[in-house]
Image (cartoon, rainbow, N blue to C red; front, side, top):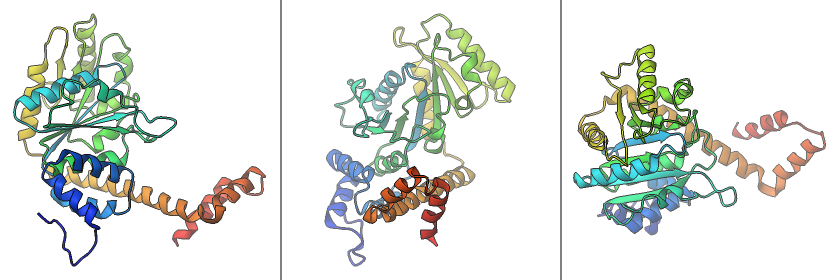
Length: 323
């Protein structure tokens, strides 16, 4: 199946071949395509234009929470149970960036051994690459690739950078926040911005003392904010040791997968945010490339060090290339 107009000649044969194989669900093609897009290989934008038109069917679930809350274990269990329901799953595990290579440290992937070999579950580790919200633009591109490849549900498990990790709401249709007893996730977390983005609260490791207190704290927060836990937002306690709460969790995700999203304003806001994100990235890339020619940037930085210039004046001059 050819997805391009040959007369348009907008894509080289390698990209064309990868996309055709990806649309057929070829695992190696999916992996290679993701790598090329993530690394911004020449032609990636034209490829994403085509992929965008093929995506939009999968439901995207974001799983976030503080480090040590058990997000990877929950992701592993959720993916396995959804797979048993006949769904095809994509997982994007966002790991911290290596300070040396910039790549992902792959910690989450190592904790998902139970599902790693399942051909209907595709797992991809990605680095944050310095994204302040814990989620880079490339992760959103990967969501579309997995969507176009035929996945029914795509799970984004975030790195767990802390209370300001709210970028996930811009990439996911539904956000699950994982809390645990005994890690200061009670009253302290209720003050955090991340508490405001969740559609579902999961108190994991609920076999520990203090689980009910966390539930009570969340309930109080929802009541104070005018969001009732009996309306949109649910609270579920889970425990791997006692094997409790998972059936309720999966029931929620199955229902989410069947309910249409109110698309108009929901997608308008998301698309608007993404346009500005892409614009910012591409403008910075363009200016950076211009100024790295003939070592202009190095000379400019040296002039700042020698107090002959300042960063503010330099940025004004750099922006002027856009005029």
